[in-house]
Length: 75
Image (cartoon, rainbow, N blue to C red; front, side):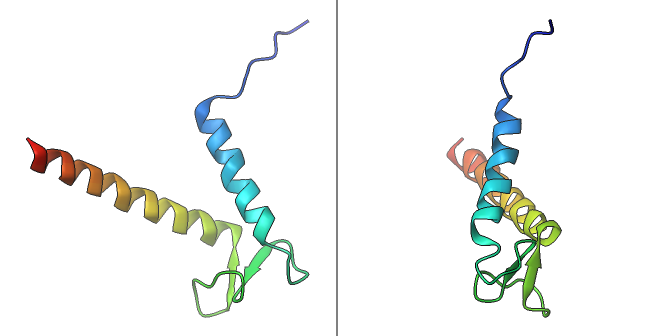
């Protein structure tokens, strides 16, 4: 019988992103998109999961750059 491994930190983070999207999507009846009332990113008034990931990725990049800049300023 194969040993079942625990999820990695990265896998848990991905699960969290999916859970956040799913928690908020569907409040207006469409569980595959966030509506404008839930969160708006582009002109169609809805945020698909891919757009959600792009948003999160952009935020992660901005935070990473800010951390690097902050660290270099502290030296």
